[in-house]
Image (spheres, rainbow, N blue to C red):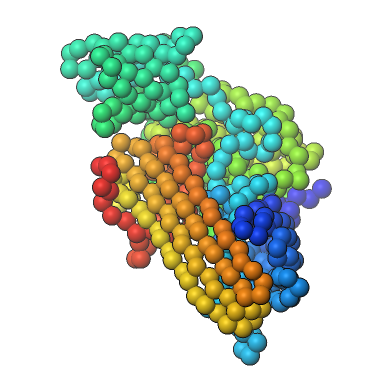
Length: 514
């Protein structure tokens, strides 16, 4: 079976399958249910509740637009709709068509917030490609046991039945340490009740106490460590920097200086970077398989693989059944897992670099040889120190806020109507690696003779943040929330402010933290 056609519509268009699912919105009139079906860039579905209708449209990777046949209390009309993903579901907007010009009357725009109740999520990761078990199938049992140090501090931890104990040496003094894992972090105290928290990424442990942050590195035990990796060297001489819209042939060595990663195109494949979806894809010459490549400057192999597998899971949708064939397994610096998806193989191998960077290869084919090809790619990849440049973004100590208020009164159309809405989003990023996020939305619409609808939505989370750069130098935030959620979102500076997860934010020096 030729896989190329369907893979181009799925893996090469990760954004295409982010809308499919069922959504609900609560109002005084009861529950409104929105069912969305997405195939490639085509979107269709139904609306049920106090208002009913069916719609069809297209998806451009960020927003879906089209026409909906809507009925409210016996009155029918054809309206223009738009929808885009939100933090907890999607925003569904309606507008009338001017009967004279046949253009969209933006003064009649009405939007509603819908909560996702089923379907593939778009931005947070937990369980790629499988509905059970509930935990991340790539998750390895994290152990903090070992010795960590910098120029001023040494931390020694040993794992016990109820957590961790050990010593912390600072300023020539030694303090007893007790700690437990909580919400993806190590939380405990040392000495006379001085509290601390710590998070581990690769061999780097970030310790936070009394508002100060300390970066410690895991120390070698002196014996050969099977997980150790060689120190990063320069990228291979003659490696070609990856460029958008350029095709690469088998045997070519490619490099990404910003992530410090290089790899070779395997025999029987061609490669190209697709700028719209920001992925590098290797396609078999006989169109029997596809391998997606991603890299990051400051991320663990597990995080990078989880993010990529979540995107792939979203592209396949809920109807595709997946089962784990092998893994997850850790061999040296490489983490791998293999799935059976509708009789085909999805094999992923993620390798950790010694400079805090990582690379992941995920191959899909009906041939068993895809596992060997992916494993060989990972094994032959090379690492150097990432070159992120002096102009690197640093959101530490900055508040980002996005506020919008809309209201209008519209005569005519389905009926005289009014709308009012307010949405607020804010991030606070602290230099110690902690962050907080808040989101709230309220909207109300009233149509004379047809009743009214209202909608509210909110979300909040906090945890640890890191900034990484992906294969082509795209700044990306990694957010590990204390409630177990995991987010990745692009960060872009534009003349008007900053774009985070597709929304425009303004920035100011934080009043809450440094």
